[in-house]
Amino acid sequence: MKSITRHFSVQNGRKLLRYLEKKSAAISPLLIVTHDYPDPDAISTAYALHYICEKKFRIRSRIVYGGIIGRVENREMVSQLKIPIHKIHPSDIRKYDHAALIDTQPDFENNPYPRNRKVTIVIDQHPYVKKPLADFSIIDTDCGATSVILTQALLLSGLEIPRKLATALVYGILSDTLNLYRAKRTDIIETYLAILPLCDMRALIKIQHPPKSKKFFRTLNKGLNVAKAMRGLIISHLGVVEHPDLVSELADFLLTCKGMERSLCTGRYKGKLHVSLRSNRPTDDTPEILRNIFDDRKEAGGHDMVAGGAFHVTGQEKDENRWQEAESVLVQRLLKRLRMPKRADFYAPFWTGAS
Image (cartoon, rainbow, N blue to C red; front, side, top):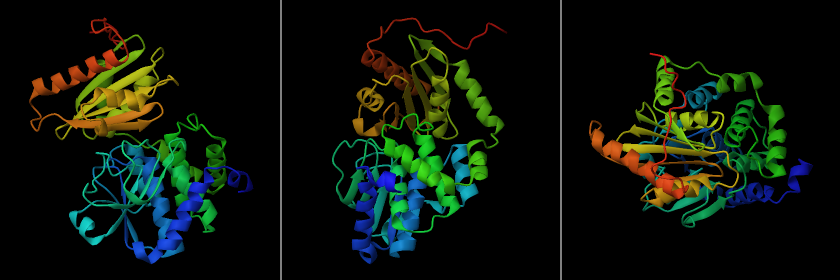
C-alpha cells in the first residue's frame, strides 16, 4: 500500500471515501447505473461501489443496467462471482432519489438514466462531451480502467476484501487495459498488483475462457467471410446480431490479423447500427475519429485506441436499403477522415478461393 499512496491518482479513492462518509445516509438508497451493455470494467466498478457503500457507510444500493449482458465472458463473470446486477425497471427510477453513473456520464446516450434527472455521483474514465452535472464526479481519463479508481478506494477503506470482489476487479482492470498493455501510469500496475493476491485464479480462468455457443462461431464465420481490407484497415458488417457485444468482440479479433492497424465492425440490433472501431496505432485518437463520422457526437465514445457507439437507422429490420446506406456512409466518412482514397480497392483477406 505504501507505494501506491505516493501517486497522485490514489487521491481519487480518498476523495470518493470522504464524499461517501460525509453524505452517507443522505444519499441512501443509491441506484448504481452502468452503461447499457456493461463490460467487466463497468460491472466490477459498480460491484465495488456497492460493497463499499453497504459495508462501510451503510448506504443501501442496487446495481442496474439498461440493455443486456451479451458477451459470454461477461455473463460468466456475473454467474461465477454471483454479482448482484439487475436489468433496470421503470420503478427503480421512481424509488431511488440518488444515482451513481458508472463508466458512463449523464450526457452519454449509452445509459438508461433520464436526462432530466440530476445525478448524484459520476465515476468514469471517458473524456466528457460536457462537464457532468453531478453532486460529485471523478473523471480520470488516464486511469486505464474505471475499476482502478474503485480498487484504490477499496484498498484504502480498511474493509476486508472478498475473493469474488477482488477477482471481479482484477478482471475489470485486465480487460480494459488489454492485459495492462494500455496502462499509461505505474500506479495502475501497482494497484493491480495490490489486489491480485486476493483473486481467485481458478474462477478468473473460467471467466476468461468460457464455453461458447455454435451461434457465436457462425457469427464469427460470417464476420470473416464478409470482411474487406485495404491499407491496414479491415471492415466487417455483421448485419443483424444477437447482441451488440458481438460487434466489439469481432472488432477486437479482426485487429489481430497480421498487417492490420485499424478495424471497423458494425451490427444491426433493435433499429440501431452498433459500431466498434479499434486501432493499434498509438497516435490515433480513436474515440475522436468515431465521433467525427457520427451525425451526433454524443452517440460515440471510448478511450485510447478503443471506440464504440450506436445510432438509430430504422425500426424495420428488413429495410435493407436503409441499413446498407447507413453502413456505406459510415465507411465513406471513415475513409475521408483517415485520408484514404474513396475509390481504393478493397480485397477479401480471408478468401481462399475454395468452393
